[in-house]
Length: 247
Image (cartoon, rainbow, N blue to C red; front, side, top):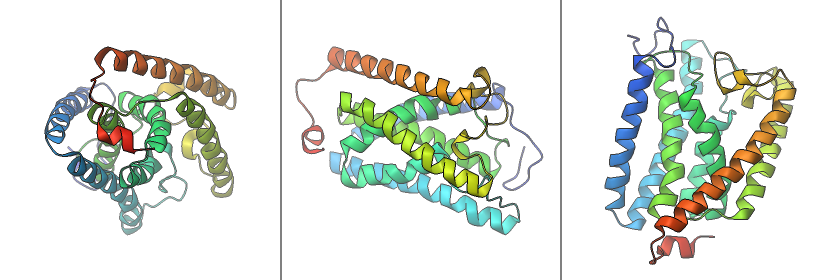
């Protein structure tokens, strides 16, 4: 088993470690929702904000740690992948209570971050510090995205579909320019990620980017329709004050 900074054991998907992590995530998520739901909504918002700050700090810590270890690589270690910079935006969501920003991020997390848990691109096994960072961030993001929908009854709206596609293309365009400057592959807009991931099913660059655009639109619509269907089935007649006050 890895120590905190040793890199002797490589991670292999769908073996015991991966399956235990997914099971642990489901168990932790259940109790996380139950315990958080017993608090007042003001307390919930503060806890979720603190969680988002923790994930953000974890992402930022990777840079000085790798500098200290002498392994820092400007092409890999800046938090410019989608999953890496989402915690910073979620800090804004929970600090301001912005349903609109949450609605935009919801699709990115449900469609993108969730598959990163199922087809991970992490290099090392636990308990290497980068493996801890990877799983904490990717699993934590899913919980932070789902809780407002479950705990506060926040709804998705049709405008969220347009914003999620539009802003993702803006982010990808900015990151593409940074990649040209650094020779990097952040957000995987220059090439597919290494290893066996969802990207492995797609055609070569740059065709896979166009395919991803279509998939994003289709899957986002499907998630939106499923969300609305579930919400219609279980809607509580008493609407949470958080839903009414957030814009």
